[in-house]
Length: 276
Image (cartoon, rainbow, N blue to C red; front, side, top):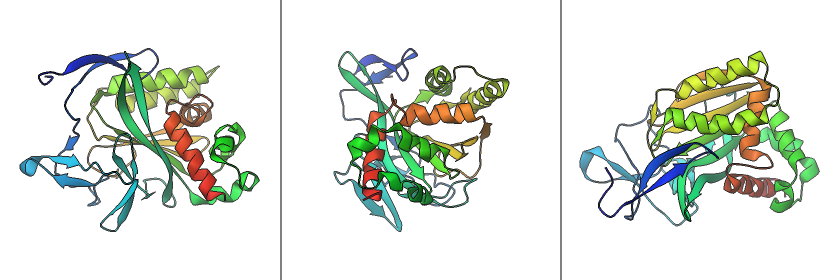
C-alpha cells in the first residue's frame, strides 16, 4: 500500500509493456534482509537500520568505496554499489567492472528508475583493442565495430542487473523479450528454444528489490543466466545456446540504440581509460 501523500504512476520498462508502481514523495529507501549471502559478502555497502530485520543502502557522494577487502564502484543515480571484480559460475577467471549505468522510464516528466547495471569483462579483451588506443569516449561510443570485437572475442563478459524496485518476473521478461526479439530477424528453431529457456528463468518469480540478475557470455554462442536474491550466485539457472539470442542481448545494452544510454557511456569512458 502506498504511503500517505504518495503518487501512483504507470511504469514502462520496455516500449510497450506497462506495469504500475507507486512513487512516493518521501525519500526512496531500498531494504533487504540481514541474512548473509553465501560468500559472506553483501554486493552493496550497507548499514543496519530499524533493528535486526532491515538494512538500508548507504547513499554516498563518492563514486567508489572500499568495504572490508572488497572494492566497489557506485552507480551515482541509483546509489547501487558494484564490486570491481567478480568471480562467477562458469567463468575461467575473474571479471573486471568496465562501466555502470541505470535503466529509467519517463512518464509525465517523472523519471522512474528500474534497475542499475554494470558490465564486467575479461581483462584480456583490451589486448584486442589496440586499433582504438587513444580514442576518446565519444569516438568509442559511436564506433559499433569496437563493441563487435568485444562481443565476438572468445572471452567471458557479464552484465549484472540489480533491481531498485520490485518487478514481477513475467513483466521483466516481457520487457526484455520485446527488446531482444526485434533484433532477431529470422529466428531459427534453436533461437526459439533458447528464448523459451530464457523465459523460464523469470516466469512465476517475484523479483524483489536488490535481486541480482547475471547475464554472462561465455563465448559468442553461449550465455549463462543466474539469479541471486541474497548476494553472489553459486550456480547457473539456465544455459542459453544461440548466437542470435546472445548477440541480440548484447546489442540491447551496447548497440546503436541501447536501453541504458548511461551504461554505454560509462563503458566508453572505461574503455577510454583502459586504452590510453
